[in-house]
Length: 135
Image (cartoon, rainbow, N blue to C red; front, side):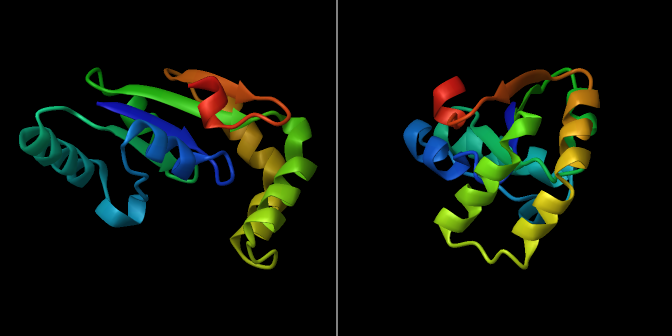
């Protein structure tokens, strides 16, 4: 299984449309066992295993990184892109008092987390880049 983790406003939806896969949210399946079941049933139905795209807020990065049958990519913005992401959230029409505000408030914590995760392929976005630019 191929899994891509990326934060909001990195172009997950656009990427998924381009490669004909779905963005999934951890809330949809609850845990990795359920995710594996979803992927397996999709593979049986379509004959191919999908690429799963998840939000970086998922707590499953380390769990999936330790699975030898899973290829994990972690795509995240460089630390200096905080203001660009603030503008991306505004351009998308996000409520700047909700989760977008929380992400920006915890920006350094998110980047620190991404930098510390081991066992995954890491791709750091630079100014103006989205998933489709690096994958």
